[in-house]
Image 1 (tube, one colour):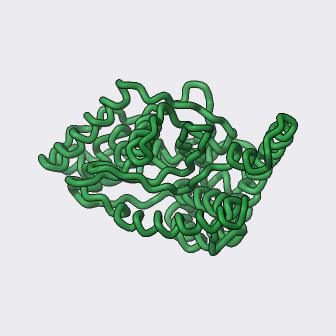
Image 2 (cartoon, helix red, strand yellow):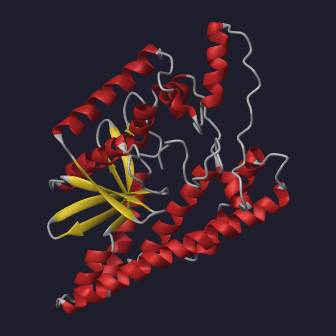
Length: 337
């Protein structure tokens, strides 16, 4: 990358940060955040709690660490693109999030776990794990670079192929707004990538994320004037890329979802939960529980049994992340990241 190109990207960075200031607080009746689509598709109750009752659930440790990983990836990529960043080292970025993580641990850690040792252990193990995964990705990128070099591509063409042209790219329309994790350019095609800080396995439900990514494709197409036919879900735990084609059915579903969200906020009504399996790990589960008890005046439920710690030798980090007897350290109950 030449000095002029790097300077041009820096100028663009200032421009998009200025524009992004206009989309950080979407109003329900005017402009929704794209992640609101994901939340609604998982459960309309989330939209009801957030925009009708104005209740904000506390974040889980896994959700906070997911955001930290997004910040690390964004800052490291910006450095590779020649864009100035205030913090480049992974350790520094994780340390900046320590107070938030510490607060979540206070809420999550039970008496069976020493909270004091958990604070330092969870940071150390998370940082080590993230570095190992980023190192694997770098090795893969280096392998691809050598292959492209043998094919006769120049250094700049290789960089354009292997690195995104934009990160945290703001896009918006009259009704939707959001930030795309990364935008790649392949020839005359622009392709949005959405990072999911969990693993991919056969049978995983990606429907809510597909709606989110398709919405980004539509907004990116509107902003660039180019056809954006597909995007990619990138699962960082397993380094898996899953393409999502933007079909007419997905476009219609997005439009209908926005209409239903506006109707819900306008009427202030929400039907009962129809899929309790999605309540595990939900930020608003306690609100729903209290609300249902008030509405039905049901008898007090039996004291719930705390999740059983998985058998075998597991670290403090894994025990913190264990939810409902599962160990999946970036599983936030289907939430959007």
